[in-house]
Length: 187
Image (cartoon, rainbow, N blue to C red; front, top):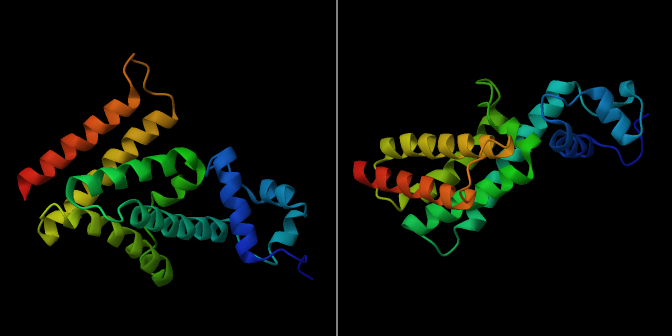
């Protein structure tokens, strides 16, 4: 019998929190069971596998990032919206490094539910970039460029990769400005 209060959603939530502590790749069913106060076999009453937990975390992250993006740009457009999005995205990634790693891979092609959730997240970013006057095809390239730049910067930042005596926030603003200027140049 499944443990009272434990559900698929609760296991995924605990997995997300644990991933932030031990890293997404460090997440195991054993650690998750220990965190939840159950034996590992008991978890399988709620989730089918570690891959199912990871998929659940990835879908949750896509929803969270879409919400963060949407909230961050309310009342903003153009350059201000891109800065607001980039700042909110960076803050979320720095606050949730383990679960963020779940967002890096695209959904499996046959996983329609995960793809749909991922598309919502991408749509939020495309909406932000619409204010720069890009064509639809350029907007896809721009979304990839912005996401890649933020990913690279935050990955280095999380790993302690910025040791020069220069304000990291200033460098981040510089990166976003350069990207905006470059994206506007191609529109």
